[in-house]
Image (cartoon, rainbow, N blue to C red; front, side):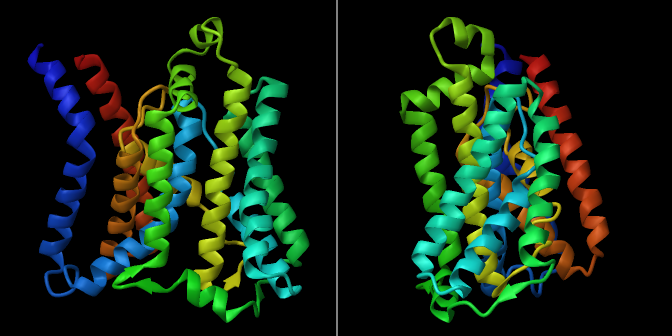
Length: 316
């Protein structure tokens, strides 16, 4: 095996972790008195939990060489539906099942069906549904936040098990389920095959349209559950929640080593990618860097990660 191929394989396995370690060392040096405090480390994981959830969903459309630009709007709409159901007197568990799980799956299915029916690239479809879902959120909420739901719901979802926040446990547990799905099931392996080459997958007997639908339903489900975490953390459902979160999700997936051209990626690396985004945001906030500079950093990271992916592919 050539040296270049060895380097490529090592980067696939450890590259994202190396990036995280470099960022941690950098911010530790720039803010030695606060960044490394245990309570701040816990805060980084807590802040990263929503990013990880929507990135887990975004991973699947990108894995089939697509994209889902509607995850932020799905987060807002499902969170709003869940909050309104609880305010209307629904049991919190039932509200989460209807709004977060059912709503997320339904909105993801809308994206998948439109991609299959129109034959348009997912970029176009989800760009449109992103606006539609956001508009529906504004309509059903009257462009006003919804609050006043159960404190028991907030305390349960935002509580701690020992010193570990519940949202972190939830995000990592869901990541473990999706890792098993992608690595150990036939359906998961078929999704990789569709991402690698749709035509070859079709002639191998794989129902490409069905797998495309499933991919977008998973993305919607993850965004819907992220919407539940969001309203619990804020104590309210905001119509503008999740704005720009598609950038964070895409950045986490691409930085995590998932190929933008499909067929390659790993769930654990996506989790680390989400932690990288959370660590950067936390570190820049500690250093009092304005929010708009953080967007510049995210954009630069996406471009750099895709360029590096292409460079490593050429090296192989």
